[in-house]
Image (cartoon, rainbow, N blue to C red; front, side, top):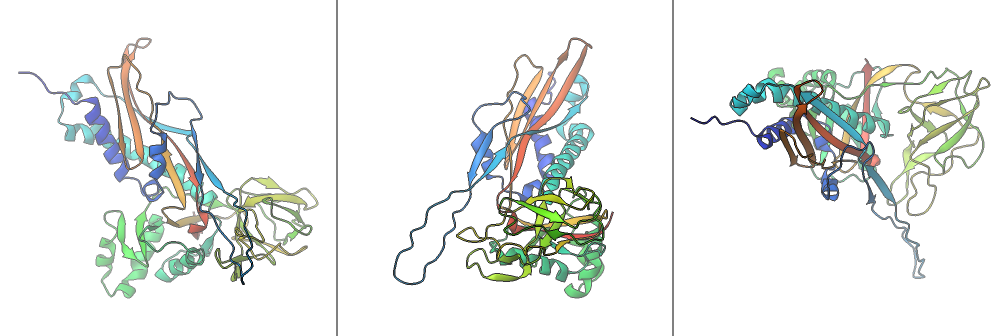
Length: 408
């Protein structure tokens, strides 16, 4: 009687199924651009292809009959396939005769879960470092629906679509705190509220789909002193940099630090009406001031003070205060509220080399993986590997908000 062995395609598809189901962050990103990388296979180069994604155009509105013709300025986001993560498997030929369910439990499931965590972690770090809107309070555990509702105001003020595609991705600590905090709000016993999280997704509440993730990135603030730094000069910020004075003795500014500048308020993206809070900005390049407290902060988004793409009320005040969110050198948690179109993720197909014992690729919902198994003639053994080649980028980061919390 012939023996039926697990095929490379079956193994790869099962691996991708487990990978996909164990992602909380990536599957809440925009995955539609995967098809743009479908042509051809990539052979393992460090930097892969880049896709230019056109952003929505914005316009000004005139008052009165005379026309005010607008020049069209198209803006783009670059999505580069530049990250490889993989997991290497080691199983004997004999185990290919197992039922696929048994093989999955022994080899596929632990490996795919580990790879899913790593890819989610990488995407989550990128999101944290490029999300400049922040809610919550450093040092205080988010534990009520109200904290997230207040954070969501920033998304709504940026005209986020209310279409069922907003995800709240939270840490286990926030999940535990919310279970207790939501009990009186839901008029349900704590056990019933806990049940909403059992599958990794809580029922839609406040217009969000709730997920728990153990790999959300914490953030450690720079070694800022208690001295309040000031904007050093007029008309600062349109290039995504600001000159600083009075920052103390050689403080550092860390990627992901969030700050505001006096006189520079957020605006409604359509009407350009000034909102009742200062524009939040995020540091994108680690740097420090010199011994006299002078330096340069690089941040995003760059300030646009007029026209269709205006994103703030005006230039920050010369000699106005720069205020940092959170405490210097303090490490705090970050939960994420984001619309699916805030950030994009795509993976590219990898070439299938010839002469392998097993080789296959699989694709699902914008995720692609490749499995290859071949003989190592140097060490006289079989080698197996699973790879994913991907990239992430920001599309509409104003449709995301970090909710900061306790120290970690």
